[in-house]
Length: 333
Image (cartoon, rainbow, N blue to C red; front, side):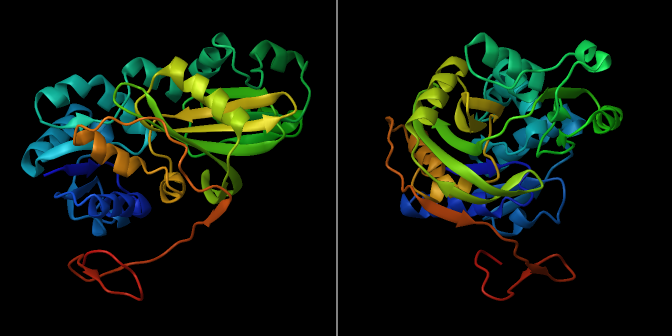
């Protein structure tokens, strides 16, 4: 039995279904268990089993609830999906794994620190010779010695919340008042890419798939095209060798006149990860294979030049919060 626990399942219906399809293809016996703090999280109703957990900000109460679920459901792998749970799980990873038979798919705390704080990300990239837009100091800003446009975002932000292009001084100081812990950078112009990469538990790179961000909504990709790009693949591959994360990693960058310039690194499944998975770089299948003790090697066996269009769908719950069939939806009821 290989049971997998997906934390903060929320709207990650695509990811739940990707794990279920991988399980079926490999003829794996086990359940996909989805957890969330709300019983109105849509992904709960597509998993084989679902559980309600405390909020992440309860700290060890959340961790102990995860441990209890792992033991009760015989979980073999814990998959976090949102930024705010990563540091807590990374810091408690050994504790969780000591009290369960599950592996936690989260990188070491030092890696999470690099990725979760934009200043730390900037410093790491600069120190290792990667291109990033220059970060402005408050002294430069206060003296007015800046050229517009600029870009501003929170140091610990996520999903492009409070991230803005800044066109003039008036906008700049308005955003500085609005955003907690702001970071101001030069504005990048070019083609924006998201890269889905997968590394095994020893940080060995297995797959790397670039996709062009055609359109986004609320910071998450809505339309994307899978491509092959040697320059991006080599640069991101070098970055991951320096960073040494594990599991599915989502890297955002832009190809500008200076080359590959980085925006952020998310050490988890990104919202658009199912695009690369469905194109053939199947991180879900790879995880099952690793849990079975298989040794994986690097492969570029994915389908390029395919375009994905994401859309909303609805499910109907009755008065007892039991899912009802509605239209052509698939999944358990």
